[in-house]
Image 1 (cartoon, rainbow, N blue to C red):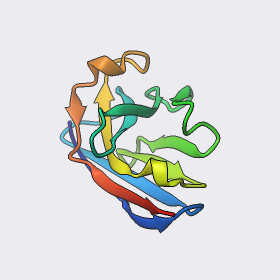
Image 2 (image 1 turned 90 degrees about the vertical axis):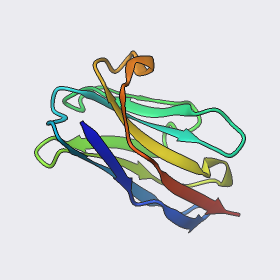
Image 3 (image 1 turned 120 degrees about the vertical axis):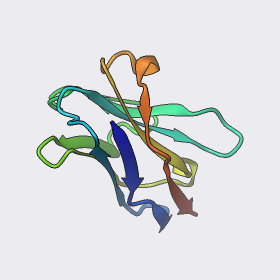
Image 4 (image 1 turned 135 degrees about the horizontal axis):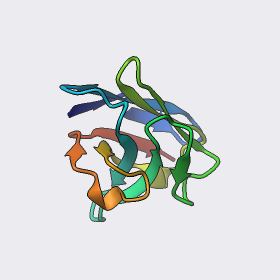
Length: 120
């Protein structure tokens, strides 16, 4: 499955952005999906993930209560609604797909990322 992220940009602290991840090549309806991010000089980190139905979600503590992951399998698209953004959320955001929501280390399909910059 090929993944393409969009929706990144520059936003002031406290603002919101909605990222999208469009999939092609295969349906995502059988995959667990997730969002990850990598800030300059740091390793890539987990942000959020969800089961194939979107019924079970997981979040990093740093984004819990501010970010919401969702998916529309009919549109073959994954979303990340980001509210109350902070400068420390600045990073390249990647979406990924894999066989199990609890095994993000097994996510094998990755997009190229979209830049999110939060100004203070």
